[in-house]
Image 1 (cartoon, rainbow, N blue to C red):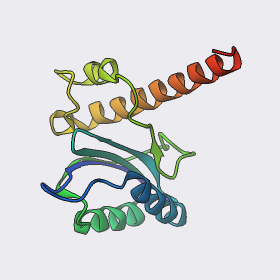
Image 2 (image 1 turned 30 degrees about the horizontal axis):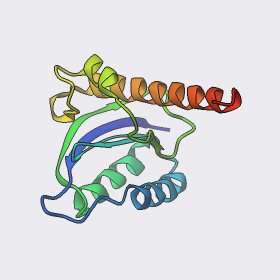
Image 3 (image 1 turned 30 degrees about the vertical axis):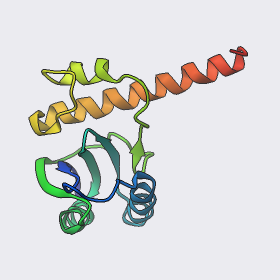
Image 4 (image 1 turned 90 degrees about the horizontal axis):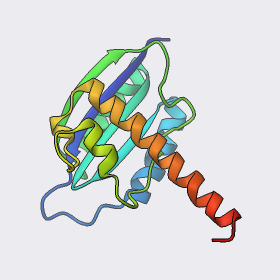
Length: 151
């Protein structure tokens, strides 16, 4: 298998309809599961940042479809590279809900506290997604512990 990783960012169209993240995730997860694509999607401050991982032809076809999708404007490829293994092997499309203050995560990978994937390198974008996923898992674990403790 010819495994690759692709990272891109895009904007939502100016004056467009509100973003239906749930619909995008349902569609992406269905498609990606059929194509054996994994990855992560981030949306914040009118930017999408996404990692796609999988077989070269499947990732290329998916990215081509995203470029033509009217929900994305100004799609920009940050990086594309062969991979030895997947970063998010269990996630057809991981999503961390945009809850709470994520400035601590953003500031580790950005020059400001604003989400600006247009200023990220490929390696930085990958590290941000890994850090954001870990942050989301910690927040979920903390919320579960609080519920268990009766808080």
